[in-house]
Length: 358
Image (cartoon, rainbow, N blue to C red; front, top):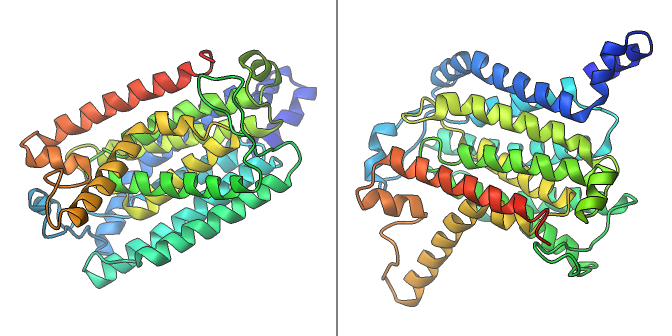
């Protein structure tokens, strides 16, 4: 909104020319989302408590019993802060912004309904796995199909560290993109098991992809770095920045000991959107690196379930996802969280290095 109201004034007052720059608007989108989250946080938490939207703790997670009843669905605060900030600072004529918003809201609605059912039923069941998966697939197919219908976007795949390897997936790209989005969404969801554990790496990923999206939409930088140039996609940098700001604001209250949990409305929407942004900037495989923590957590669950079935009751880990395994080994929760954050930052640096190492 500010872009459309204030930038035209640059014809009369040169100071308003700053609204032309994505970098300027991204900085203030981050600050806006951050301030909104911190200011509205206490009121929002009180509102959740009043509605008795408390977290249900599973019987097998004994060490988390003291967290029973902590307000959940805090992801709504993230969603509100991000959308408000984006609507204020982004170019609202940009089609990539609106498609990203569609994905963000779509996954958020799935997560909201899942959270609502968990709270009202008081049994932590929520949506069935099939229903949740179907909803994620529908949103993903809709977004990717529309994206592929726009000129300039192609089905080639960039391979990190190799500039000449660019396979064209053709019609299989839709399936691949759906796997990326649904996998990212569920990866963040599985990681969201300790105070601040998921939102920290999410902020790191969003910051990393802000850089990838920006250079993808910059003709000279894209050419210099030998990556796909997609006109207009750079505007999504504003969305990524808002995501960073809202995430940091939420972490203010979600840090150990957490005053609020994000719930599936937060984790599913954040993961699904990060997956879609990776698709937008043609860095789908880099997502495996920058979101490596989510990948590790997801693989720990897959390996645990698979091994349990094959061996008829034996386990690889004491409990999955992996963060619970370390908990049961006696590692303090804050230490697990900070170490996982460090790992996430290191993976993000490796991911950014792929821009030059190719």
